[in-house]
Length: 94
Image 1 (tube, rainbow, N blue to C red):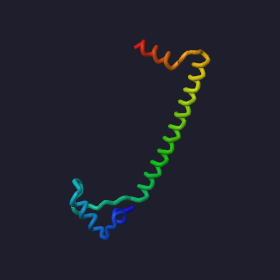
Image 2 (cartoon, one colour):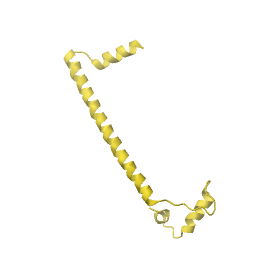
Image 3 (cartoon, one colour):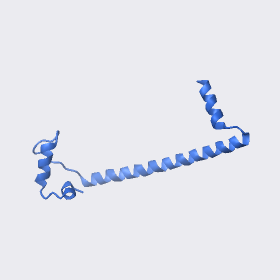
Image 4 (spheres, rainbow, N blue to C red):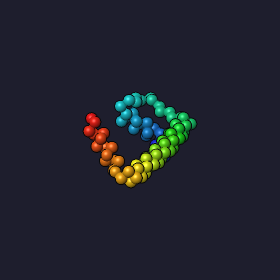
């Protein structure tokens, strides 16, 4: 959505006047051009990457849940708290 439409500005000159007045990098006569296809492509790439990361996070969470379940069953079978036992041995070795 364009700035003009978002803020109800009627004239494109108003937007450029604002940019020239408040920008620290742009000077009078500078025009900003954004290629819609390029931005759409970047947006789609980001959405795809986000979906991949969410899937990876989900797999890791399932793996963690499985490890915790195995640890719980092993602790019960061996009748010791493996979390505490492992943690204390690891601390003592340092």
